[in-house]
View 1: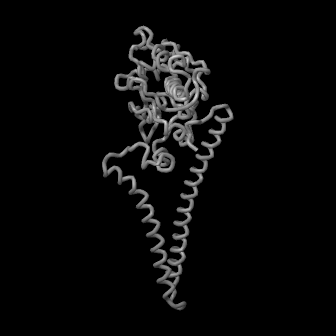
View 2: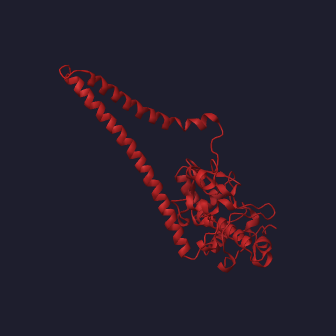
View 3: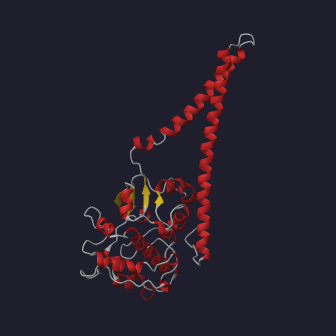
Length: 305
């Protein structure tokens, strides 16, 4: 049932006793908000951004990110390079009768599954509290090529709807929606470890584009190896000369070669150290933030041990 045309954003109560426990799955009459295996793991992998740091739509334009429409809920607020994926708000999830029929405790019972479903739906709704903060965001959301929200809604109606979403806390939403935007490159990096998949979402569909991303690292390693081998070759050539035959140029070549080898290895060590530091920092942030949620009374049942 769709909301009345004059009020596309029906009033939705957000009393916390009716919103609890996490999951990213909602499948009532074709409604899908996510997949259960990816709930807490996505929250763990999102190591930087918290829910209060969602970027509104106009900030996406400032960062030169194209807003790409997706109907796949796992890609909602996932970004890569110059684009961010956003799932539009369907009319049915804005309908009070829909919530009463499919998501209320009276109609579905207070089972663990339905609590997780309601919390996933609340978390998805709450993302629009952060995405549309100003009237400029509202205009962007209603652009003909996006239509993230119903086109017949007014700014005043959305403000009333948004005011109700402000009362939704982290404890009322699934673990994924306790965090903000997620980098797709990071998800793909951790997918083999956490999801046991080769990637979270494929981004290259052409062989040329897929293999092009390996050119830089390969050339970098070849450069390091080339410098080291050249330095060793010079060192061996100088050592083969007798002490009396060594000239100043040979001594300089030997010293310079050794210096370049040391510099190359130092550069490689520095890059590896920075990488390890960043990964450790990300996991430390994830663990601390997860403990913060647990101390706040939120049990991350969607997170596999």
